[in-house]
Every structure is written in structure tokens, then in C-alpha cells.
Length: 250
Image (cartoon, rainbow, N blue to C red; front, side, top):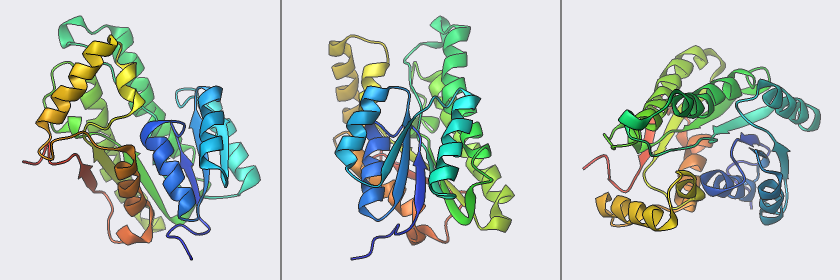
């Protein structure tokens, strides 16, 4: 049985855990060959074992331009093209504006914005005409969430990138869209720098704000990413697919 991504080559940054890993699994199941990146080799090794086939893991930090160059050299050598980019690598930190330091600001923007920009820019020579770029944003760009001023701004920047790139790349029929998840139960919550009990309280607080009454699952975001990456969304570009259980919409 043929898949929706048969013969396609995808690059997924931050593909070793959470939404990125679920998306990699879904893409491979739909016939794609996937390159996943991450900063931690042990997590990449575990992801490769879980995905099982048609996957190459490349230890890479999106902030380091030499790492991106290495990534695309490997892709060029092994497959010679890219059909799909999922720019998923990102971090979040819950820090009130009054307490935010320049280091906090720079770290979040470097990974979430600068990293995405150069992930896409450096892929353009390999990206096939008719390809699809999916930027993983967040519904935080639409919400005023205390403590997420910097994070939310980075995700709004990705929404802007999608509009501009959709216009810039239209002559090559390259589609560019954002996917804006709501609160998804992934390891990113463990990275916000709070004790476990506070993390659990945050999860419960977010779930209570979702009209569907729960947090989302990584597999649900993978299904949404598949829609944007595949020909199912062939007439969609410059758009934002919000998948947040209604949190920002109702």
C-alpha cells in the first residue's frame, strides 16, 4: 500500500523527542526517508531504534551554522535532495519579563528564530521545487501567557517567516506553512526549569484552558504536520494550522 510521502526525503530538526519524533515516525510510516537532528546523541540513538528504518540521525545544533552545513552535506551525499523540512527544534522557558536576562532573551531567540531561519536558508539549494516547509510555531503567539513574553514572540516571528517565504518561494512552488500546537504533553515541559510538582501544576493549568479538556498528544501534531507536508495541502501556503483543542480560538 502506498503512503502519502512515498519517495520523499524529509529533514526534521529536534526530531529525537516529542513532536519531532512523532512526526518522524509518521513520515516514515507514510513512505518518507527522514533525517532527524538533535543535540544529544543518546536521544538520537534511541529515536533511531524506535523509528526502525529509513532514518538517519545527525547530531546537530541549529544555533551552530557549521552543524547545519554538516547536516546538509550528509543529506546531499546520501539522498541528493530534500522534499520536506520540518523546523521543529525549539525551547521554552517560563520567565516573567521583570526577571528576564539578556542571556535568556538571546538563548530563546537564537534557537527558536535564528535557528529556524538558517535551517531553511541553508536547505534551499537542496530543496526540491514543489517542496514543503513546515515551521512549528505555537498558539502562544495568539495568547498573552504570563512568563512567556520572549517565547511567544519567537513563535510570532515564525508566523511572519511563513508569510514572507511563501511569497519568496512561490515561483518554485515551494509551500511554507506554520503549525501552531497548543499545550502538548512532551518533554519540553521538563525543560522550563521548574521543579517536577510545579511542572505538573502547569500542565494541569494548561489542560483546564483547553475547550477539549486535555493536553494534546505528539501523534496528533504529527498528523497535522503530515497534512501540511503532503499533497493533501497542495493549495495551502502562507497559512497557520492551529491545533490547540480550541484554546486560542474560542
